Structures are given as C-alpha cells and as structure tokens.
Amino acid sequence: MPEPTTRDPSGSPALGRRAVLAGGVGLLVLALPVRALARPSLQQAVAGFTGGAPVTAGRVKLTLPPLVENGNAVGVTIDVESPMTAQSHVRRIGLFNEKNPQADIAVFRLGLRSGRARVATRIRLATSQTVIAVAELSDGTYWSSEASVIVTLAACIEDLT
Amino acid sequence: MTKALVSVPKTAKRGDIIDIRAMIAHPMETGYRMGPNGNEIPRHIITRFVCTYDGEAVFSAEFFPAVSANPFVSFSLIASTSGTVGFEWTDDQGQSETASAEIVVT
Image (cartoon, rainbow over all chains, first blue to last red; front, side):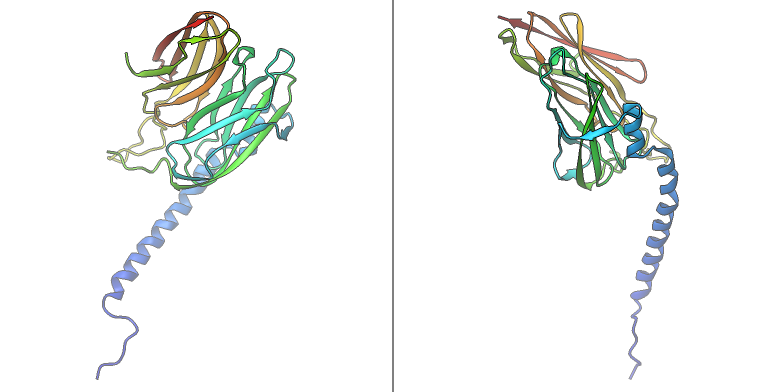
C-alpha cells in the first residue's frame, strides 16, 4: 500500500505558479516606489494650485460614482455654491487625484459669464483612491470637496487592440 | 471636420443660463502605456480647451493625461447676445481643432 502523500504530482506545477506569482509581485513592489517618487502627493498638488493658501472643506460638491467599473471613463460633476456675481464668483476649479501616475486631472477657468459654477467631465482613475476638487473664489479663498472611489477595472492597463 | 461635437441651444431668452457640452475625438494617449513591442507609447494629449462667446473667452480648461480619451466637458453660460459660440482644442503637438455654433438670443 503506497504511503499517503500530502502532495500529488499535480501539486508541483501549482508551486511553480506560486513562485512566478511571487516573483511578479516582487517586481511590482520594486517598480512602485519609482512611480511614487515621480509624482507629488495629493497635498503637494493642491498646494501647487493654491500657492500655499489654506483650503477649507465645503461650498464645493464633487459628484463621482462611489463604485466605478471602468476607470477609463469616470463621470465627474463639480458644483460650487456661488452666486457668480462680480462681487463673488468662482475663478478656477482644480481637480486632483491621489494615486494616478500624475496628480493633476484638469483645471477649469470660469468667469462672470458662466452664470453657474458647474462643470462636468470624464476622467481616468488608475486605482481606487480619493479625488479632490478645489475651487478658487474671487475673494481669493479656496474651498474643496473630496470623494473616495472604488475602481474595479483600472485605467492604464487595458490591452492594446 | 467632424472630429468635434458641440451642443449649444439654438435659441435662448436673454439672461438665461444655458448648458454647453463639447466633446472631441482624441486618443489622449497618457504616455504611461507600453506598446506591443514593449516601448512606451509617447504622450499625445489635448492640453487646452477654450470656449469663446461673442469673441470673448468665457471658459477654458487645462487637461492632463487623467482626462479620458475623447475629452468631454460640460459647463454653462449666460445667454447675453446673439452670436457665435466658438470652441478650440489644442494638443501638445501644437495641432488645434475648432468648432462653432450659432445662438439666437431673444
């Protein structure tokens, strides 16, 4: 009677697969810090936009779907509470992300003829992360809103056809 | 050319806030992707979008690689005078594309 073995012959390819997987993960871990160093943090990106001025949460509404199936096209709407008059209007709106290879997404310039401070666009998200919208008002104050998004299919890794 | 698609109401009452939508066919290649031969595909993105109304720039945007392919943007304007709403997109190779629409304000 043969000795009961804990691993049948089909176990060895599985081990091989594991080794390959581990190697792949190792490579990824090695590659990540290079990318991470190449981009500024979310805070640095926002500071670059505001010139270091303080940013207060509020007055901005950033609308993003909480769960995104395709990171290649994520609909974003930014609403800013502003009467859009000569005394008080929105000058710029900046949109930044936390974990894409580059922190900037877009900067919009509005004016008195905009009537309403609402902008919508479609963006790419490389992974689940935080997105922040910062609005510069005519009085020089900065207001922000952030949203967390879960991305199931990331942008930047799709197959080329 | 039909690369650009814009939506501007044909008529509006003076003082109304109108919604403008603009989209253009463009790959918005990020420069972070590898081609089939392992070489990086060079960046090719639209960096700037400007909307003019009655000859005056009323809305503009700077785009980065995180804007989706075929960039879409929607915003609003106050209908003030009958005239042309013009759109211009410029990419990082210096090429630009324009579109325009007429609006009648009563």
